[in-house]
Image (cartoon, rainbow, N blue to C red; front, side, top):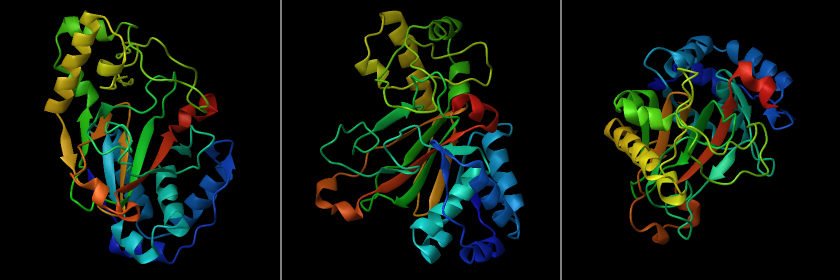
Length: 298
């Protein structure tokens, strides 16, 4: 769902200088969240907009939202003042945090032409996945703020309803996906995402709203038994079949409920090496922990 900001709210937010945030460990401090909420809820139609955002993410049939903040980005630029406002919106959904102690709260995802093309900072197709799939407590939400889209016109975001894709699979495939037979990636120097989960099931049958612990990269980069690999490949095909795609514009803020949707990106347009680094696609990423889980995550 795309959510536009009412004009009277935009006008109020442009004149609302929120204070710098503080962190408690890697989580946004409770005092900052309370201060931001006090300031923002005084703005006209903010609570209405925040309620629409939460409903888009957790209501029936929902699971992702794009908050259209482009006018605010134009008015304020994309520096600290703008990021504080976006952080304030994020805090209406869940608790912002960084699982990477060596990085800031908002992590840059730029474009590197010499990187693995399938990585988030690469130039190729970034297949469907959930972030931090191999942690016992992955972020409940992953969010991406578009600072600059691909100037050559590539790189649409792709999303797919993980549970809907699973429902289209055979009973045998679902049974295989529920077995702890999958693994992917490394796990080190992380905060707030539990312990390493290896091996893990793609489906956790004990929780109907649980994560679909899937990353398409496991099909090429993990040694899986044939039957389990085939079941995961079938799921990958269903995710593609049910995908939605759209181009993020400057100031668009995509929030994905990882308990419902998986995400990825189509390839950037050919010719990225001709684009100056300062003009290439740039996203900022922020993770969110659902309030009921924030204490156990810390």
